[in-house]
Amino acid sequence: MDLYGRYIEFEVRYRGRERSLKLAIDDSTEDKAVSKHLISINDWIDSNVYDIIGIDTASLDRIAAKRSESAEAKSRPFSYLANFISGKDAKAAIVSACKGNDKHVPIARSYLIGRMLSNMGVLR
Image (cartoon, rainbow, N blue to C red):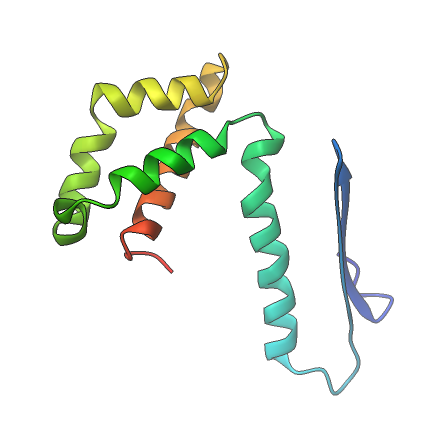
């Protein structure tokens, strides 16, 4: 990001992913506009970082969608999530999504938890 040229810019070109977000600023630029711009940068990073490091997010998204549909997941989301994440099925899916890189297991687990909480209506 560069605040010196009277704009805030985010640009990335990495492994076939390209994104450029630029917001011109001046003395009349409202804080709300800057906040929205920074949020859009954060959203792009959040939605791409897992794929960039090699985690199979599509498989985790499918599991999160399927597991978040039950009545128990919706009525008791935290206890349901805790039981599911500590189980063998979740652990196997997370390890598989990491494609053999054990260092990514905690990151993939965090991704799956976030997606499940979002699907259950607990997060945005």
